[in-house]
Every structure is written in C-alpha cells, then in structure tokens.
Image (cartoon, rainbow, N blue to C red; front, side, top):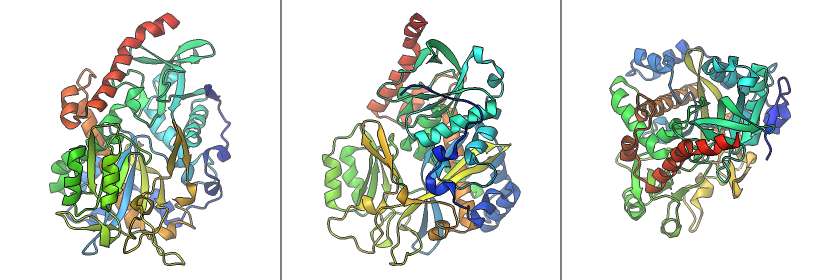
Length: 494
C-alpha cells in the first residue's frame, strides 16, 4: 500500500468511527465519569478504599510517565466467593484501540477522542520538533493494522499541526518498504526522496521490536521499550505488576490480576493446569489481538494445546475466570466473571472492558472506553466438547490471512444509552477500573525505566533475567542489528 498523505481540515467521521458509534449518544453516567475532576475521583476512591494513602494515589495520578504515555487496559469485572466485586487487569496494551467505538463526549467535536489524545498527549511531548519546517523533515503515523483508527489519528494530527502527515504502513513481512534506518534514525521514502521523520505516532502492534529497534533516536509515541516492558509482553507486565505491588501494597494500592505463572516451559503447562484445578488460560506472552491465547477447561483442550506448534519457548499460565462452577481454584480462592445483565432469554455473557488512559495536562485522564462480550453465553455447566474460547474469548479482532484482519463489531458493547446498561456497571466501577488502568500503566513505565541505561542503551542482562525466551531475544537482537547495519544501505540510497 502506498503512503497516504493527510492534509489539514479533512476529517471524515464516517471513515474513522464504526457506523453504530456515529449516531450513538454517550450514557450520562459515562459522561459524568469522563468529566469528573481528579480531586473528586480521588476522594471517592479513597472513601471506598479507606486503607489507601491519598497522598500516594494523588502523586501517582499527577506524576508524568517517561515512556508509556498512552495505554489501554483490558479489565474483567469479577466477584469473589464472598461477593466482593473487583476489577482484574487482564493485560495492558501500548497501542490500544477504542476511539472508533467511543461515542462523542462533545457533539460539536466530531473528532472525539482522536483530538483529545493528539492535542493533549502527543503535541505537548513533541512541541519542539514540530516547530521545524517541512523541509527539515516529516511527521508520520506508522501502522500495521486497524486502518480505521490509525488513520483517524493521522488526519487529526494534520489538522492540529497544520502540516501534511504521512500515513506509513509498517508490516512485519516488509517493514522497510517505505522506511529506512540510518544512524538509529528513521527516514521515509516520500515523493522519490528520502526524508527524515521528525517524530511519529506509532500504531504498530505486532511484535514492533522486529521493525522499530529499542535504541531508535527518532521520537515516537509510544517507544518500543514500553512494549518490551509490558505493553506487548505479558511476562514483563506480570513482573512489573509484582514489583509495583511490592512497593505500594503497604499504602493501600495494588494492581489486581489473575494469579499468574511466568516463564513456563511447554512441558510444565500440564502441571500448572492441574495446580489450578484443571482450569487455566495459557498465553503466548508476546502476541496480541486474541492470538496465542488458549482457554483450557478439559483434557481435550489441554491435549490440543500440547499438540500445537508454538512460535516461542515460554508461556504465561493464569487462572481462568469464567462461571463460578468452572473457574480456576487458586490459593487466593475463586473469582468469577460477573458478566452482562441477563438478556430477554436470561443469557449472561462474559465480557471485558477496555479502559484507555493517557497523560494529559499534568494528570492521567481517561481517553476512551468500550466493552466486548464473548460469542456464546456462560452457562453453569459446560457441555462435553464445548469450546471454552467461544464462551470466554472477547477479542473482536480475527486474523484471516497473513497480516490480514477482520473485526466482529456485533459483539461490541459501547458506552452509549443502549449498551451501557447491559454491563451492570456504576460510577464506582468506572473509577475503580480507571485507577487500576493507571496503576498498570505506571508499573510498566517503571519497568521500562529500569530497562534503559543512563546513556539510552538496552539493559540486556536485566531483560534476559525477566524474559529468557531464546526466540524473543533473537527478534530483539535482529531489530538492534538493523538499526546499526541499515546505515550503509540508507546512505547509499540517498
């Protein structure tokens, strides 16, 4: 696909929102949450969590991150055996989707959350380089999927900067079709010329470290270190959460997650599944969009996982959160997915909620939000041979070919007047989810800081101590080699 150039003032809502979202009216409760001042939000949270140190929470919400300035957390709404409701962080994404699914907060601002993120997160970060002229370099949005959403950011950025923005495909199969690396900086081949990128907004989601090296000097939101530290690495994320909890649990703040076992070799998986009562979720830690996730509730599903060939050597095993009768048994007891409000046929569906947060105007703020339900309803008893993934899998993306994707928006639950009531959530639930998403963001950013040397280099030994997967290390080293070895090729082309 050729590079597309977006020019100022050409935003077309039909191109960047799902048709359902175009005419949707945001639910009043969701609107109230998005407009809530931070001091009121903190007051409410601390009232419901009296052991939380308010000063610590305020500091976390008002201290800027260094690397992960924008993220989206997938969150389960669950209950314990004793009826205590919780929000569990399932994973946190460094290039999250969500804008195309979120109703407008301000009906007079058709760009919606695209505008809020680019104006209040991207522009302040790169204000100095954006003052440079078009002759000195170009501004780009890099993407590998989700054209509807990633192009929306490109169009809004063009309008905000009053300059053309280059929408550049960066696929794993041909990462340098339009890009070059020289001197650890990115260049784009535009109009027959090789021009430097002044800065870029990244929507490269699939193993981005294979195309955009860790040590790249071109300013990018978010940089690849945010992915390696947990934004695209479930093993790193689990360890980042543990480090965070060890530091802040005594002050009443803790990231709630499913019980997790990291750095698990394939031969060890059956042992851990048995330890969790025969019910578990096994994940390839470095894939996303529903890839590499195996829900296991029977011997047949475990056998299918063991027979499959996998691209990496290590896995993460987590407790399975489904109906109470067939959720994992852990040392912390059971939790189960509360699910949707029963429909007319009394069917309850498992769902997760995406909470997108970003650093904006000296604080973290919610940017977008939506939910996704599974294809089939949860039942008290699983039929023999039933696919647990169809009952628990909520991801809307579906891979249909080599680097080709489709979505299933019929399972999308928006924060509008129609869908929101089906979730059974209140204002306190949204506040809880927001705080959990921010804590997860901070944990990953803290680990990212630890992975970067003072001079900007990569702490390989520390990373290997966290992720000892040979194939992953090879991918990262390949990316670093490209950033050093690409200089001759790029210079020769110019």
